[in-house]
Image 1 (tube, one colour):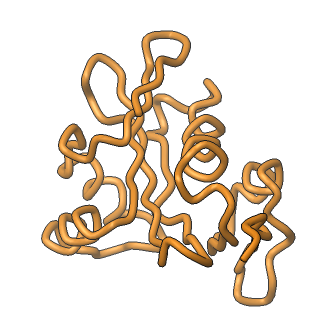
Image 2 (tube, rainbow, N blue to C red):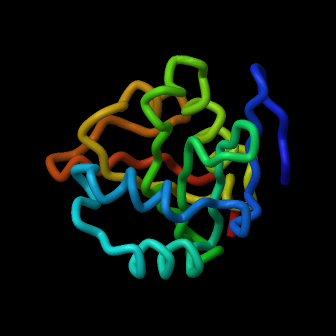
Length: 142
């Protein structure tokens, strides 16, 4: 998948395009992944069911990772857009691609967050529980 966005941005799920230094640089300072090592980031990206990157002029400016059993559930993880690229709807398109347009669209989705709840609610995630877990029901019929 490769999809052009406005203002010279694009989405792509080709993990070989990701600049893991950029991904690690952001995640190691994020509250949910603080201190994560470069080796851990590389291992998680390599083992993910899917990754989606946001690019501008070939540079990684956003990212998310999906874990899934491929049958019943998917987890949305490590979602970010670099601060200097925010305010352009990139986070919306990143989540849309991962959750609604990807191969796991009909599965039950989960994520944990303490921010950006309105972003996830627009994609059908319910309010968080006491552990900050948000869930989106699946539509797959067994």
